[in-house]
Image 1 (cartoon, protein in one colour):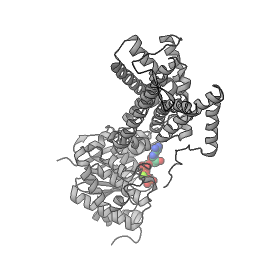
Image 2: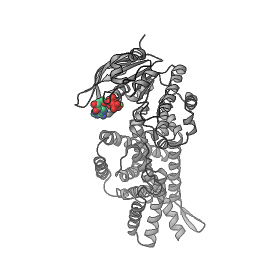
Image 3: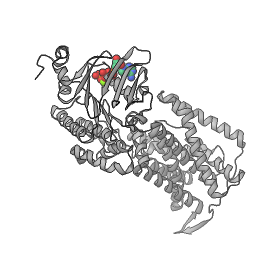
Image 4: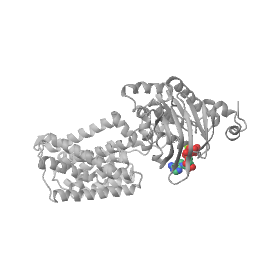
Length: 247
Length: 288
Ligand SMILES: Nc1ncnc2c1ncn2[C@@H]1O[C@H](COP(=O)(O)OP(=O)(O)OP(=O)(O)O)[C@@H](O)[C@H]1O
Ligand SMILES: [Mg+2]
């Protein structure tokens, strides 16, 4: 049976600059959490954009390779079509709708669902993030960074995706909030069977909460494996986990 | 006397508010400061002439013709000029709207001739006395229909799911695209609505005055209305429209017809100096 997401040798670039992604392949199985690690500029965000059809919006394009969703080639689909096929995203920089209320932000996420399922879906998100329920009438632009991250995750979840893409989940968040969000995501995976592909700056966090990880370097996959394999990998320890690594 | 002036000022102001609302819808959705809004008003008036005088359509069909025609033209302008230029410097796009208005004016004068035309519709055109005021039924109808359209748009924008998606797209094209909104379709819809609201204004202005390309000047009163009310604000556009209407009538009655523009733009200047975000506009929400 085909994997939920299969990225098959994707190369991508922005304009005439060199390749930002160079034959990247990765697989995400249904119900799993997969991390993408890598230094600044390694191509993590570009990979997320390639999967979600957003490269063109940023002046980039897929040069070769394919992305398959349940075996269907979606490489050149428009972003809204990819969302409707069940791939939702919490983007880098959160990008909540600042002038809209929390409730309206979630409602936009849920808009791709049949009308009858929207209310129940929103309730599930408020249940997951009670903080959002407390603030439902507030303009999203006035929320704290952590709250906006919850909202960005919530808005993506509102679309009832099969696959969630999260870019820089832990950036700028207190460790306790990161922990809380990952625990919520664990519940989401357990209850809805949603798969998650998450970009992480922190290798330690990624290996604690994710099943597998891919390490990008200069647009290529330099390392990949299960969390267990990578924790004990020497290069991984030297480059990404630092001396105090391991548990 | 004053009551009479206020009545016609508020009635005309309601039409200006409607046209200004169309302007703001376009501005919010696509960040385009549309200098062709005045010609959209003229187009509405000529669509009415075409439907009623040239084609001889029955009135309800003529209304449908005007609305559909205006909506299609709005979509056409978006598809042909605005969408291809998205992402270009704001000045290029403004120039394009100015060029569009000039070309539209020339096109209309070629097609219909430069002379003005009278527009007659089955709308009631008499008057009656009420509390000592002479109420013109045409003014009253125009105001009522304008308010109905503004109310209908407000409800649509605030409470329907398409309205929600339009608000999301207006907030951020990128965020909306990521959330799965068809941003292009929303922008096209905004231009259709903006053009249609202007055209409905044109239907009434054409009847209150004479249908000619000179109506553009009146249509362009939407610009000071919007700046006075608050650029991105929908209630602001309506309030601005009403103010412009009232000031225009007061100035031309008590000072001189020519002074109306001076007074309107004097208020605009004062607003820009003391409250640049307009009466009901907001200073941008900026956090994070
Ligand atoms: N819109 C763009 N136009 C041109 N080049 C870009 C654009 N976005 C990214 N790049 C380039 O592509 C490469 C990969 O960038 P990308 O944003 O994918 O990195 P990243 O791994 O997400 O980094 P970070 O951890 O800093 O977010 C970089 O060299 C970057 O300069
Ligand atoms: Mg990035």
